[in-house]
Length: 343
Image (cartoon, rainbow, N blue to C red; front, top):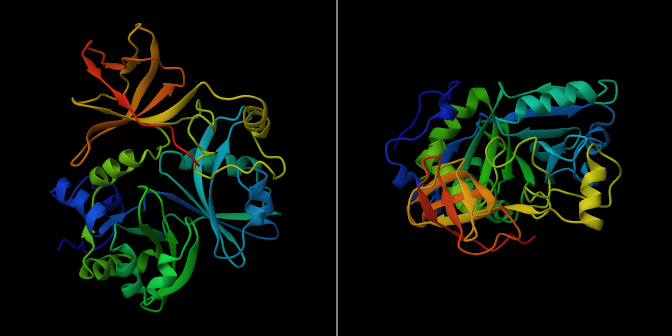
């Protein structure tokens, strides 16, 4: 068992613990323990935190009750993605977290648009850590350590959460879909993070680095900001709608005009898709069809112990037949493409 003496800054970026294959199998077959503290965590308080956020993001924050959560996007005025977010409604406040790559842009958006008289915001990233447990045994592991009812943990819907304790310290436990399968994130004060990690490891959760976690994410087709989507990607192109991140009945928000127009009167011409190959794929490689037309490009790449060479790619809907990935060196790799995602 590998147990860090402390979850110090930089531990969250550890690539592996010596055996990526074993770490991957823990995520898929038993329970994998991963530090996700590199994500931004921001708390919104004051008189109107939910209403303020609703005016900035793609989902309906006002509709959430305490203990519920949702996925959402923050967009530019042209409907392109600044950040993808998890939004957690609590009794008196709202907690938002997002990936490390889009955290600075989201924080800048908040500083620009949020009136502190309506909603105060505080960056909790340095004082609140995120310890995740993923895999078929994850619910039992977190229930045992946090003294929760296992069935209550299993019953949590995606992004929903409950308040519990560890060593008399408040912990928020939330259901995560970051790798497309069973998973839970524990939001814990930094003083107790190392002890929580150790306790979960004693329950059989195997330490997992970023490399194995990335393989599982790519397998599931979950996009990552900065690689699969950027501020040049439309919300629909990244599948925010199929991931439950867009409300079409709420009031106005930044970028709504483009999102509504595409939903009600049009469509995008390309989507993120999972592609597969029999040889290594390279980020940035072009995708061409049998006619020689460029119909997409490779983004996140991985080599899965179970599925081989895989990637997330942006691909035109009318992509044609005979797809090939063409690297900068000119090497060509035949591709197969998964069916498009469904809600």
